[in-house]
Structures are given as structure tokens and as C-alpha cells.
Image (cartoon, rainbow, N blue to C red; front, top):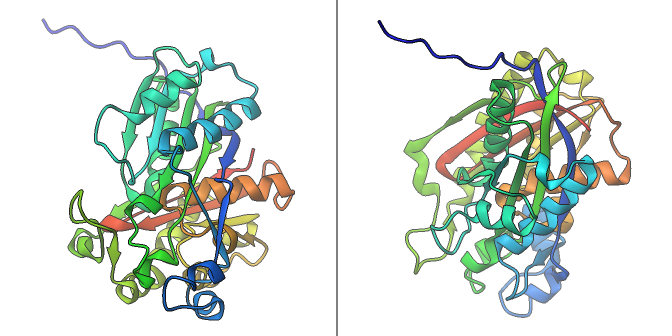
Length: 322
């Protein structure tokens, strides 16, 4: 006779309790870049929409960035470190593959013996991590989860390459996910286009990031809006009922194209890229955290999160704004 398993009853839902963000102090303007590469402020703004970006110091790695953002989210949630039993760090810019950076971040935040792992889905990483956290809470595998997107893209950029050095930047954004009597994080719609893996790539440890900008632009502006609309449908939310649309901050033209196709006519569309640049897996929580702090979006309202990038991976879900 085979013994059956006993599992906890599923929780009704999971929700985001709080967001947190961190941007390094150093700001690099377009004019500063124009001193070292053949570019200018008008050229950069017209093509990617960026005016300035934050660049981490030599003493700031993805762990340090994550600790700042994670600590802020934890404080905003009202929870103690002992209440967190899972830490997920989304990043694609780690200098070393092990040990887990999530475990180091947890230790520095005083979180004792949590589950901890790093997740790499590049610019879609935060959405992948948020979906994983939600599923863990609903399944009873975790009570509260700290989810962080932390990137130091500047260490993978060739600062003489105009096609990439104007785009990428550093920062971290975080969220605390906990139990809810009703769903506060909608079903994720995710996938990948592995046949296009080489459109955004770092070949090896001795290489810099390179991308085929036009190919990525065409893919993002055609393939991602249907994913976003499907996420709304699965969450039972009409696009016109969205309070915010927060796409990955890849390129202002891509962001605007996706927003037009989603037709979220009453939503505030995140444009954090203008002042933060492209921070890959950190960009969505960075943008939404700033929107919440400024009072741009109301608590409890639905927001659409849409991640996409290298892989080519993508993910979208609707959440309730904490």
C-alpha cells in the first residue's frame, strides 16, 4: 500500500504588500556620454527616450543594490525579517554564478535561514520572480516572500559602444509578497522566443552585452501587446480599468507602442526610463515604486506589469497596487 501525501490547503490569494527601490547616487547625462562617444542629447532622446541614467560605484554590486531596495520594501510592508521565509533575486548581471546572491542579501537583511535563490529571465526576471513568489504563497510553501530585481548592467557595457552605453544602467527594485483573502496578483502569462536568443546576448565572461536593436524593437512592438492583453483577460480586468501600465523600461518608443496597443485609456504609463535608463530586471519595480511614492497611482487599483527582453523571454501579470 502506498501512503498518500498531506499538503496544506491552498491560500485564496497572494498580494504585494509593499515596494521598495534604490538608484545609485551617480547620474550620467547624455551630455557626459557625448564627451566620449559620437552621440548627443537629441540623438539619444529621439531614439530611446533617455535623458540620464544612474551608474553604481565600484563598491556597489548587485548585492548592495538589492539590500537597499529590499530593506525599503521590507520596512514598507510592516513585517519583521523573521516573517520572510523565501527570498528571490532576479538578475542577469551577476559577476559570479555562485554562491546565491539571494542568500547573501537575506543574511545582510537579517532574514534567518530562508529559502533563497537567484533567477535569470533577464528583463522579464522580476515578473517571473513575482509569479513564482505568488505561487509559493498560494501553495503554502511560503508565508511571505521578498522579491528583488537587482542589476549592475554597467559592468557588462562597452562604454565606447554607442549602441549600448546610452541605454543600460544600474538599480534595484523590490516587493514583499504575502497572503491575501482574495487574489492580488493575477495569473502570469509567460513564454520565450528561443529562436531569437542571439538578439540580446553576452557571449562569455570576457565579453560585453550586444544587441540587434532593430530586431528587438520589431519583436517587442508586435509580440508583447497580445501577451499583455491576455494577462488582463486572465485576471478579469478590462484594459480601460487599469490604473497603471508598467512595461519593462527598455526604450520609450517601445513603451509607448505597447501602451497604445493595450488601449489602457485611463492608465498612467510608466516612463521611468527617461531618468533611470534600462535597468533590465530591476526596471519594473523601480518604475512602479516611484509612481507609488509620487502618488501617481491609487492603492488597491489594478496595474499591468509587462516584462520582456533577452532570451527572448516575456511575462505579464496584473497586480493590485499596495
